Amino acid sequence: MEYQGVLRKMMTELGSPVQYYLQLENDFLNVNQLLNKTLDISFVKYECLNCHLDKPIFRQGFCKSCFFEIPQAADWIMRPELSTAHLGKEDRDLEYEKKAQLQPHIVYLANSSNVKVGVTRKSQIPTRWIDQGAHEAIEIVEVPNRYLAGITEIALKEYVSDKTNWRKMLTNDITDVDLLKEKEKLAVYIPEEAKPYYLENHSKETNIEFPVLQYPTKVKSLNLSKTPNFSGVLKGIKGQYVIFEDNTVFNIRSSEGYYIRLNLG
Image (cartoon, rainbow, N blue to C red):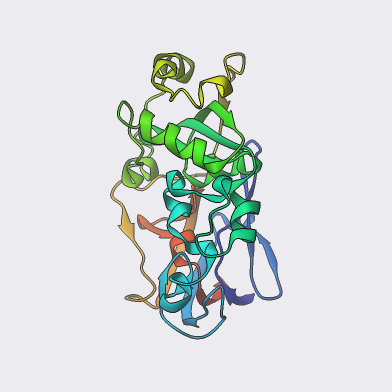
């Protein structure tokens, strides 16, 4: 069977284990069903997720010109503390920014390779945790806008990491942590503006199981720009990575905007 289309991050559904789906040009694939099958991946061309032109992808699935122009790639995406829609102040497109920023956001703790603090829209729970390969996570505060989430994350990352070690996550070099205790320790460091939104009575950890038959022992990362053709037996899916029998891993999310041909052996 042959499929083709531009890569976008896999869609997910929380279950035991997580179910992964890949939307290509004319097909919707359940990636879990491809475990133990040989996948042949060929890079065909680039296709910017915004302008759809065959231009090299710069970041986040966008070509360089789109990345520096469209609101979907503005600095506040990666740095929520820079959000200004709550002040009525435009960055690139105030209407878009109001929709994205003026909605409930969650500051959370997630454990993938280590305990980290992060921010996401409430509507992205638990998707965000799955995308990060977290095997456990807990919510800390629920605030009404992205700015408050951003300043809370800034305050808390003085005491806990805001980064994931993706190699440790993929080799399953993990340690279970009592996230409720970690959350309670951090509560005193929440900024005054966000303290009223502390989720004191929300103490349940979410545990996540990933569909992995074999973890890599030493991670080798596949870059389609450097290796346009690859073949391997799929052994697992974790975060936004697919894991192959030969220890190769392929990050679907960081390859957004790559148009590929996929053959199943």
